[in-house]
Length: 241
Image (cartoon, rainbow, N blue to C red; front, side, top):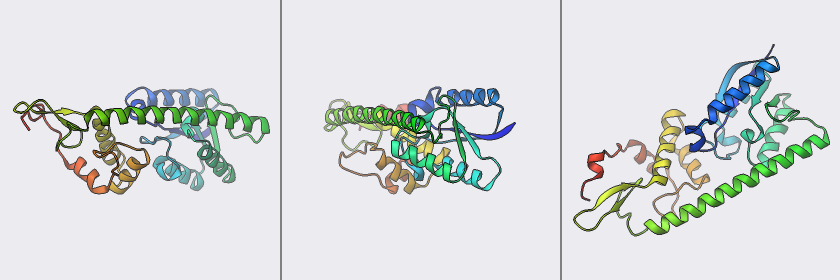
């Protein structure tokens, strides 16, 4: 039985909260049993979007372990779990081939084959994955712009994640769902994955996560304030502001 690693990657909060990791692990485990592989360690990435090699903490750790150790094979669920950008996809595969490391997919046979037809099919699939990701990003950006346009006059001095609603004398804080998702993401990266403040700020800027100001960028100090700020209670949430 050949030893291998299992690699799991989720590119968004929806996948993390849904069945993404469990589905991937189940598919990889079933593939390993059927093809006589033993998964000796799992590497699960924090939320990555379509980030490149520098943003893949667990991928880097796994690759280093493969270069230094005896395990030379990694199993993924499918090609778009490796990357949803064709250039990044091919960069990963070429790097593994140069290092005599093997990537196996549970759904795409001969993923790293040198056969011209297989390479063409792999790259076509990568193009479709990249196109699908571009459509998702475009729709998200449009929705974000509409939300900003609606809320620009009512945010006031409310902390990030909230806006001021109600008339004079009855104002209160109301959660802004999109910003609350970003807060959850920040705390996940910091507490769950031990990312530095600088790395989180860079990630948020790369992924176009919304700040309070449309043209503003994320900085480590902003990230730190959100991490240190206690969650507003229901009682506080209904107070006059």
